[in-house]
Structure formats: structure tokens, C-alpha cells
Length: 186
Image (tube, one colour):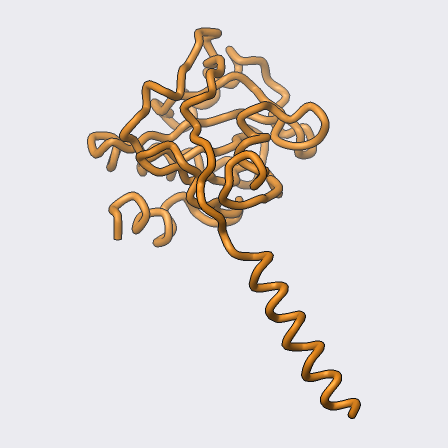
């Protein structure tokens, strides 16, 4: 009897976990958002229709900061194929992005030659989460998947239709096979 109970409980648990972990279908797109660049000008995501977009929260004093180099290499390799990277500096993880917008821009340019667009510093979690990151991390808003930003350099993949596809954890390289295959449509 005990074995039957364990078997039934295990089957129900597995089914419930499978149901909860499945991705949904997009209910909205990224084109509704406008943000500010490091220079203070408005950036409208609707100008990126038809592009694959990789969104990443960044920091200049993090162990993952060298990912800027890989991000720039990825951008240079695929930017002519309707692919773009958008960086969002964030100071929420051990205050590893203390600089102002001018300092962030100088750091990225001088140290890593960053040419992909960098936006104004944002919050990616908590009560003061930016609207964009609220959308990226909440399945009720994006229709696909909920997540939490674990640390600096978490990457979000947005398809050509402006829909969230998935995310990649911070410790994974921007040039991981999963991201490359996504960009190349494989």
C-alpha cells in the first residue's frame, strides 16, 4: 500500500512540475517599451521590428565584466544579420555598477570597445524593477516564462517578432552554443 501511495504521489508531482515548468505562448511584445540611452535620448524598441535582440544587465566591477568583450565580438559578428545587443547597467548586485552614465560609457568604450547600445541604469528586481524587466521576468506579462535575474550579465533572448524566447544565466558565456544557435536560427 505504501509503495502504491509513493508511486501515485511521484506521478502527480512529476506531472505538476512538468506543467509548471512549461513555457507558454507570447501574449505581448517588447515593442511597447521606450527606454533612455546612456546619453539620455529615448530609445524605442519598436524600431527593432524584425531583429533578434539579446538584452543583458551589466556591471563594470563584476567577475563577469569580461563578458563585455564576448558580447561585443558577438555583436560585431552578427549585427549585419538583424541581431542587436542592448545593455542595461544595474547596481543591484553588491553595488558592482556604481558609476554614472558618463562613467559607464567611458568604461565600456575604453576597456572593451563596446559599440552595441547601452541604456540608462535600471533596476532588474525588487519593488523598483523597471517596466521592461518587469515584462522580461513575469510570465503574466510576457506570456512565456517567469524568471528572476540572478546576477549581472543575465541574458534575455527576444525573437524577430518581439517575443521573449528564453533567458541564459549570468555564468554562461554570451557565445555559448545555445545563443549562437538561436541567432543563426538552428
